[in-house]
Figure: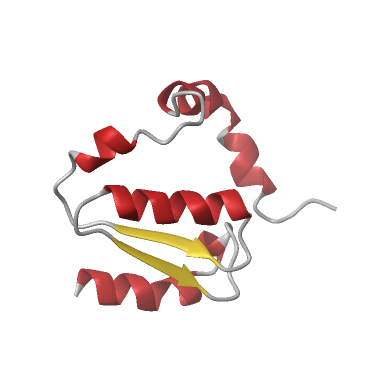
Length: 94
């Protein structure tokens, strides 16, 4: 059985070459991130893959003044659960 998000993911499949191009071989461009001067909230879910969680932390560490937050009980599909995402975003944008 396919997950409900499958249709969304297959609709985005054509963007994968662009994603790969900007990911620089899957190395986080910490030098470029350190140049950013903007409010940033890096989110992950406690049920996400370890590499996703590590990347969110690394982004927050690279950007001056950024915040990192782990959403307990959530995984990478948190966008499908806005009720779990809403409190963190409301607080960040307030």
